[in-house]
Image (cartoon, rainbow, N blue to C red; front, side):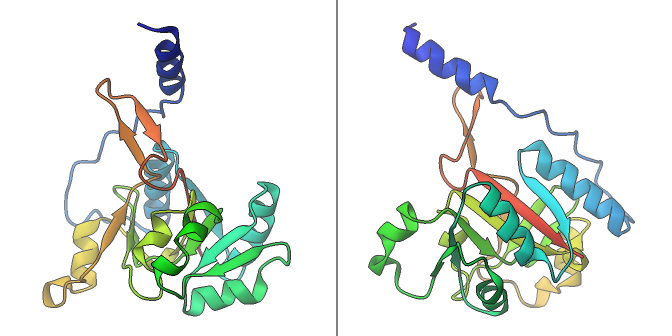
Amino acid sequence: MSEARNRILHRLRANRPAAAPTPAVYQKPLGWDREQCIASFTERMQAVRGEVHRVGRGHWVDWINTEMTSRGLSRALIGRGAIAEQFANNLSTTFELTRYDQRIEEWKDTLFHQIDFAVTGTLGGLAESGSLVLWPGPNEPRLMSLVPPLHIALLDADRLFENFAQLIEKEEWASGMPTNALLISGPSKTADIEQTLAYGIHGPKGLITLILE
């Protein structure tokens, strides 16, 4: 085995995440209150290197301004709608803001090479699995959560469900399925034949969930 290959394998093995907790035995409903849902969601998401922070509903832009500045990230991507306008009207003057408001063919190079992070909303969250549920559409296309190296997702605490079964029941999906529901459980990751995880290969290397209370 070559020295270069040994070095690569050593780096990959050194970056293995902590083992995820054993999933709970399924039952319906679980009977969790809000704090139990937040605790479970946070534990599951952090087990796969996702970040979770609890912030006030009116302070998430301030959190992004402060935290992204401290990380040296300034090139932001937003879509259209209420979330985008709230961010655009209150973001730091040091940020460079790009809107997803044109055909991808017209600005593909910018999206792939000149964006540090994207900010999107969510349809909800699943506490039992630590997953985000997105419903991509014209205002927030799928590429917003797929291409930038960091995805910041806003999750209303009142939209945190125990599990997927409860979400389907509460949202009455039996009478109207979404056309493009998307479940995200942590940053992008993949594994080789030795089951060594690598992050950021097919999507964002980082995922931050801001739970809005």
